[in-house]
Image (cartoon, rainbow, N blue to C red; front, side, top):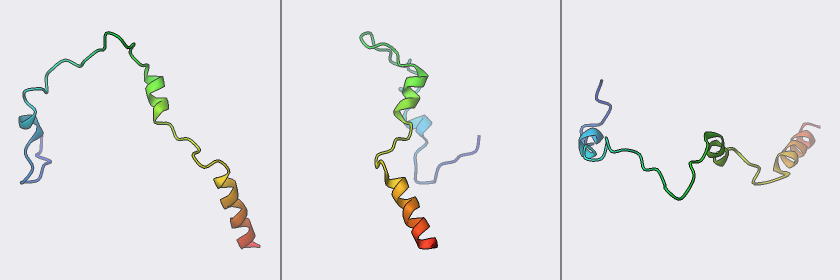
Length: 64
């Protein structure tokens, strides 16, 4: 494997060698979230409803 790190950056495999092979934590109180639900957290949403329509209207006006 080629060294992808710069000369002044430490190798993370060495820096984190004490924790790199530890088992992943599983909560005893919270159920495991499905991959579908996890993906939904990062799905795009329309923070500015109507913004796209407004942009399209202005574009049409400028082409007339």
